[in-house]
Image (cartoon, rainbow, N blue to C red; front, side, top):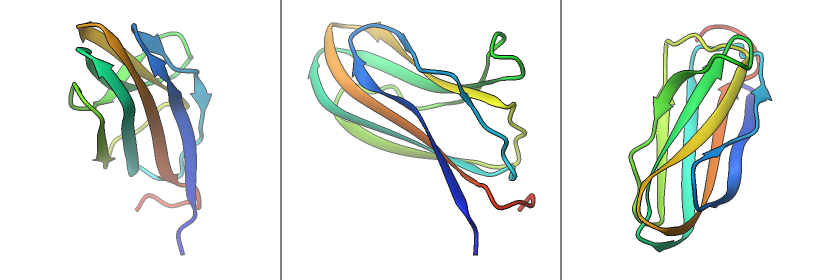
Length: 116
């Protein structure tokens, strides 16, 4: 039976662009599932959230980008056959509008071992 690991990458109210806390992970699989949940949306915000990874916590590379949101929403993105660097974070960028929303981003991964 697979053992699933989880990291919370972002969990806060967004009114302007936010960089989530850098988290370290040593994945054992090349398959991941990313979840974004948006609640308490108000105003006219248009926000894009992406998950980034880095080899050194300084130089960030986009791993996946969620669909831009303008209301409460939930989205899951499966990531397969991609290597991932040991540092990850989520970034929510306000593209336009005003208001606020609570954004939760999690990454789930196989923490047991293997590449499948």
